[in-house]
Each structure stands twice: as C-alpha cells, then as structure tokens.
Image (cartoon, rainbow, N blue to C red):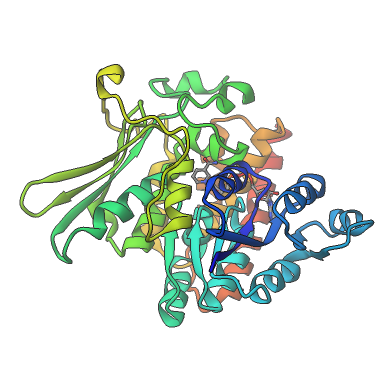
Length: 387
Ligand code: NAD
Ligand code: MG
C-alpha cells in the first residue's frame, strides 16, 4: 500500500523538493492525495496534473476561483479549504511546507485527526508549541521534523536513552552578514540579504537566516520538539553548514550529524520515516575535499534576534507568537523596501515591549495575539518608514 501524502505549500522551495523526493521514490511508495499553495494556482495545477492529484487548495480565494475554471478536479479555498483538504483526504502523512504562522492551521488539522506530520513549518511550533505538542500527544500523531538541524537531532536522539543527553547544540551558518559590525549592517541591501552562502531557500527564511532570527525560531522549535529546557540548548556558528547539529551526552561524548547542505536529505527522512532510502545524486561526504570545519560564537550585538527569541521562549505564553508575528511583518516590510535590515530586530523588540506575554488558553488566543502583534508591528514599521 502506498503511503498517502498531502503536501501543504507544494509550490515553495521545500514543497518542490518534496515532490522531487516523491518522484524519485520507487513506484507505489507514495500516493499524493492533496496539494496546496498560497496564491500560485498555475504552478499548483501543473504539479497536480504531473502527480495525478484531483484535489487542491489555495489560501487566496481569487486565485482559487481562477484556478477552478476549466479544471476537472476540485479546488478548495481559504483556511477552511485547507482544513477540509486534510481532514477529508484519508491520508497517512501531511508534509507542512507553508511559510509563516499561516501554517499553524494545517498543523492543527493534521495532528487533530491523528495524522503524522512531517514538519518544515517551524512557525507552527514557535507560535503554538505547547498546544501543538499536547495535541500530538493526545491523538498519538508523530511530528517528524524536516528542518535540517531538527532532523539531525531527531536522528541523534533516537539512539539515546532518556536522561543521558545533557545538551543540544544547533549549528548556524551565520548567514551572508557573518562578521559584519552593527554599523555596517545599516546599509545592507535586499539582494545582499537574499544571497545566502550555503542554503538555497524561500525568501522569508533566507532573511531570517541573515538576521539569525531563523536560529531563534529553531531554538524554540527544538525546545518543543524534544522537551529540552532552553538553558540546555546552545547555538554555534559553523559557516560551512556541514554539521547540522550535535548532542552532548552525560559521559563526555558529543555526537554530530554531518552532510552537505541539501534539504532533500531531511525531506526524504521526514517522508520515508522510519525507513531510510537512497536520495538520488547525493554525493557521499568528502571531508578531505572540505578540509576545514570552523566554529565561532554568535555575535549578540550585530544579531540581536537570537537573544530576543530566547527571551520570548523563556517568557512563554503568547510571547513567541508575538515575536513570530512581529518578525513576519518586519521581514515583509524589509523585502518590500520599507524597512532597513537593522530595524527588523528593533521592530520586533518594540512589539514585544508593548505586548507583554499573556496566557495561552486556546488556539483562538494565539490567533488574537498574532493579530494584535501584527497591528503593533505594522504601526512601528510605518513610524520608521515615514521618518
Ligand atoms: P517558500 O516561500 O518557498 O514557500 C512557501 C509555500 O507556502 C508556498 O507554496 C506558498 O504558496 C505557500 N504559502 C505562502 N503563504 C501562504 C498562506 N498564507 N497560506 C497557505 N499557504 C501559503 O518557503 P520555503 O522556503 O519552502 O519554507 C517553507 C517552510 O519550511 C518555512 O516555515 C521555512 O522556515 C521552513 N524551512 C525551509 C527550508 C528551506 O530550505 N527552504 C529549510 C528549513 C525549514
Ligand atoms: Mg534549519
């Protein structure tokens, strides 16, 4: 029996690579039973045709209406359409590759139905970590991380007995601005920020990597995925992106997960788990060719986002949701040329100051915290843009 899979955000960087992994698998390994995107109906329709999918969903209702014209399959629209696509699919696995807190709906729909979740959308865990992990526990659904560092940790931790792991160490490439002083960051351009040295990814996560907010989001993600207290999770800059993460054990041993930076590896792990299969055209690691693996601490002055994320994680409640929403607004403003790179952390910090952490009672309280943070952050962006 093929594994029935729904891919959320299939037109993006992770989604496209996931469809490559599916196409490369031996026949009858996977059956794609649903694909979704934000607004790119044209690409979604092409993917649906190629993979024999007859049900798709688009977040944007206009795009959904246009796409539905002249297509024999079914096109669902909006967040409700996304939920229906998942809950009515009878699938075994959902791969969530949506960007941003918009992915939370899909995470909750899958886990609520007890469907296993291969999770690239780290924002789901940042925004709703406690509720999301409680939901998975309640329904018995597994969350298999697709983020490369967390995929590495998932593999490293699988072999260890409880109580033997002292620390998790997340590696960070340092992004395109590693080594720059805070003053030098004031004039960096969108193009420079989008030029990531080691990974090719969607726009939002590429900017998150340049500010190091990506590592901040990943810190919170790791805390929820593995139940590890924040003071036992470290971050180290490793520019070559060959070591994807490490764990330190009680007997002094440190274990690392290595590989070339290629997202098809963690995507394949997430889709095939618990099996492990060949990833086509994957070169074996050649350490002699790489020569040097180097490490350095994070510069907290040039890259305050990691500190902001750690503080929001520790504050808990609505704070990580506020952090994430403010970051999404600030990154969007930077990518539209309305905010300077150095003002991204400034907007996030000011938003967190204006909105102290509240308690999270339900997914509804997260939705209102998200909306409130977006309003405050947008006001702060406007104030800076018109100065
Ligand atoms: P992307 O921007 O390339 O693609 C995002 C996908 O989400 C697209 O299919 C888009 O149509 C869809 N989408 C956008 N807005 C939406 C909305 N409001 N509602 C529903 N769908 C929407 O992003 P990406 O780089 O593929 O990243 C996806 C997720 O995976 C992010 O959470 C990112 O942090 C994580 N991730 C990505 C990489 C990578 O290499 N790209 C690595 C690790 C983790
Ligand atoms: Mg990552």
